[in-house]
Amino acid sequence: MIANPCLQAIVEAPSYKGEQLWPWTVADYKPFSRIQLYSEMTDWEVGLIFAQLVDYNSLHNEGNANDVLYRVIESKKLILPGGLQVRSTADKLIYPSCCCGLEEWREWLDFLATGRSPWLGHDPSPWIEMVNGFVRVWSDGGMDSKGRGFHLDFEQSTFKTELRKVQHDLSTFLIKIEDWANGIGFPEPNKLSSKFDECFAISHKWSKK
Image (cartoon, rainbow, N blue to C red; front, top):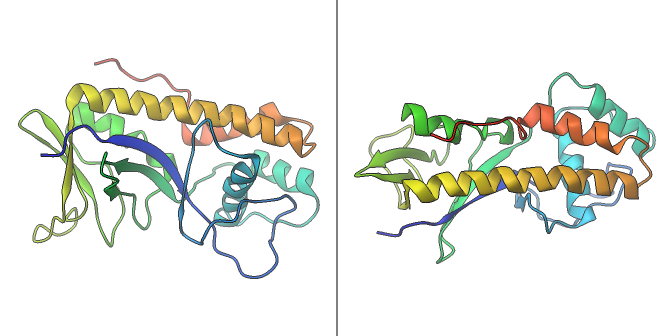
């Protein structure tokens, strides 16, 4: 049994060819690779997250950075491909698959109360169950009982701790948003971080049960 891996909030990198489509500098990631959201992110990585945010939500990218970021703030809803990935001490990974979004990350919290696995995408289709007091995360089989892949296990107390760490990482990302927005001359960085917080339910309190 491999116990007590860690949880990390991630976003899928955008796919584009040739000249970049956004009026700010972005980090060089391979398309569809995973960007971790945490306190040590560079400004260029934050810029890449917002590039994906603009692209994935089909927002117009014409004009300067201020024009584009005000469109982000004015959006009613924002989503991002990604979610929470599980990493073991041996660097085994279970990551969110196709059609899973960061906006759904709190479904991992709901699992503790309901026992229902959060939606983690398809092809493969990871899923979660409770087994003998452990939280078990499977790399596949959520949509097919025949194939389950491999699994990683958490003690329940560690699982709760890791979810709190995820919320902390996302909260520090809100600060990174403001720092990045200030750096590119956006006049209302607090509104930008507040919009991200609102759409991805970062600051909402959750039960200590």
